[in-house]
Image (cartoon, rainbow, N blue to C red; front, top):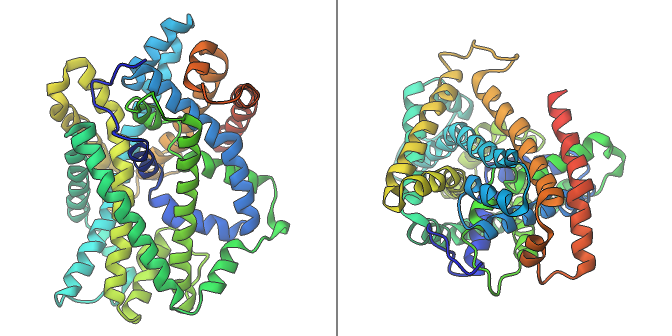
Length: 452
């Protein structure tokens, strides 16, 4: 267990927490979670969400980390080793393949959307040097989506940013990136929150987000909170398993780092709401218009009218780009690690470029679905939405369900106690019960709801 990964190791617990939080914090945290909170009971939804984190998110997160740390290699090869040690069916190795395929599919369309943030960041940089303002945000956004060449360019630019980090390995690539990017993300976010305080609408924004309204809480609210708790922690795609493989054994508690990642991820999402909604409310915009409509059409209108709006817009879309970048790095790493183990450490750059190239090519389907192939429908969905449905709504819950069952029922108890040695026996039994019964049932509910 003292062996190190051939890919390298995190230098400290803080570096792992920053990397894992970077994986968890993405575009969804900054526009989806605040909107879901405000639209589903405010503070009541936050409490339900935190309950789901405790019952589903954190237990599965701990399971992924401990599986990765024990195996020390890519998810597929880690599971192959654990299957032999535990004497169970080799079919469990399929968890690793599900995670790798899901990561490649998600990166394909995620890179396209992240390219939008780069495009808008560039527009605000141009404005700083006398470029034309975004006077009609709706037309600007529609023009971007309707231009396949421009979308392809930004999709390629973002993918090159991602592969440039992963190709350098754990210490020179991933760790150096998160050492800079995560503090930058936190600083940008806090600056935007401070600016939000100057609008005079921070109180209304806080009430919009946190005032509990229990009357809107129902079964669907629990399912939404559970789905958000699961997806926000990057579970089911084996990224946390991969990052766990680079985690030192001595002096680092898996429960503690798991709690730190879950809390930091939630705090970033809530702070994003406090950064966005004061501006939205101060300009009379609809705060319930979450998603791309709010981010790419409504907010730029406010930025053009507010003092220092160009700087705010630059900081905001820069924040989005950083959040997307840290997430995309973790999506590319599992498949890259697998190819490195197969073909040798010296082939890391080629492995990263090969996987990124495949994902980029798949992303062209999403690019074209926004314009030239917009009429193509699969299961009543456009191509981009269909790929997202397969990866996000089906493969991730399936992967999370199998991870819970594997850790709860198949994995050797000695391995579990070795990895969770600092956890009291009573808490260990509670965690194992959650993995065996509660988490599988709740994740299965989310999966069934997605299918039905």
